[in-house]
Length: 447
Image 1 (cartoon, one colour):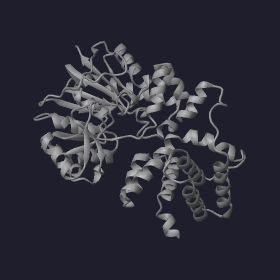
Image 2: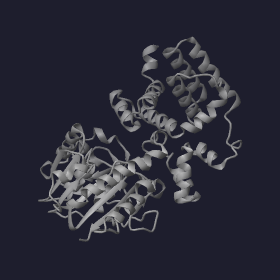
Image 3: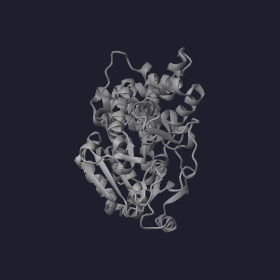
Image 4: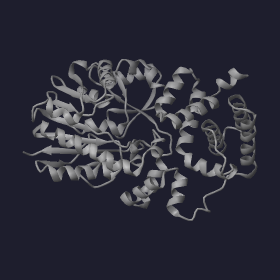
């Protein structure tokens, strides 16, 4: 019986959710590792994915529903809380799963992992939920608080998005981030044609659709990419379409000398290398193990001869490189990652309002230090996977105020992708194309 419980998807979901909550582990990485390690069937892998993302995406909503069934003074052990939230999520959101199956297995998990008191507590709470149903949001009088609970997004972030984008756009963003993320890949045409790569994917029974965002991107509709030969041979790279637009907008020429200032894990580095012939991209990262990861990815993609990876803080790059030595510089800056709330739903709970200004100081620090390294007529591309002005438009405005030798040029892509704002920069929100939220700015050096 114990082995049966330990091998169950619901047991595994509780274990993973507890790790994500307690250790700050990334949901996408933890989930990918668990699916590989436990050799789950497609059906079980789908259920596990659904529960993990569902609980994380709707956590505040689930907690609001759970609250009336737990005494205020009751301190719940972390794994018990995740067990209750996952059971509640399945009862409320998964129509095809019968309530009795959810109830019975949740009680068995409580019995296996905890003492008899925990089993009784779990049984009592879940029976009460089934008997009484969950409360709606009509009792929440404050509209922003209500929106926060319904979308399961911290109130400070809801207010910030409304202030920045207006109520209607914010509503669209919040509705989009709780949908299941699709899996996108970029095709690597360094050593193969697009036609050859597509034929290879078909032969591996990977099903896909062309992306409307970028001609280099595919949306995988069936199949597990990391196990495919196409991925192992570097013919495809796991990368969201929005991220693909960053290098696409850089207009890399075959002979360019390029700096990727914040490069790990190397997805954009290898994309730059893909477009080079006799040029070179120098990739920087502050961590030794991430420098190795960049080179491993370059090796897998067949572009190791066009990539030089170095352990260095981009803010110290001026100590190594001569002024105006690079044709193009990419600053894919450290950021809040709030454009990835669909793909990494836990991010919304981990970030605080103060983080935005703290990150802005780092982002500006990097831009200021690399500015002197790009030649006259060359370009700095600044990008983040954030949708917050503090990390995006505000950074560019402050940089340009201090650096009159630069001007903001229009960020252009192959498919002429339009952002959410009529600006020279490209602002992509999660609701625009179903891809990750991203920001891209192009800064041209005039003199």
